[in-house]
Length: 71
Ligand SMILES: [Zn+2]
Image 1 (cartoon, rainbow, N blue to C red):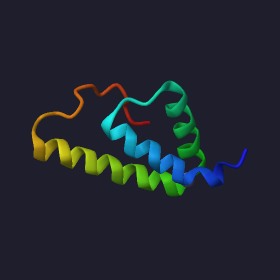
Image 2 (image 1 turned 60 degrees about the vertical axis):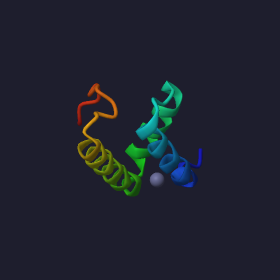
Image 3 (image 1 turned 135 degrees about the vertical axis):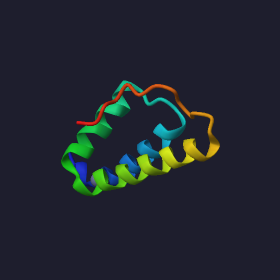
């Protein structure tokens, strides 16, 4: 298991998750990677901020559900 090599894939999944709902499998592997990789956790925060900013600017609510509380 070489999770260190999957940072690119993690970023890919994070990017995709902004546009579409990831499959449970993808979400799981992304979660695991984020748990292990501090660097990607930082990247995730930035993706999240971009997403928030984008939905704020567009004012359309890119996705309405907040089923993923932090923590
Ligand atoms: Zn990583």
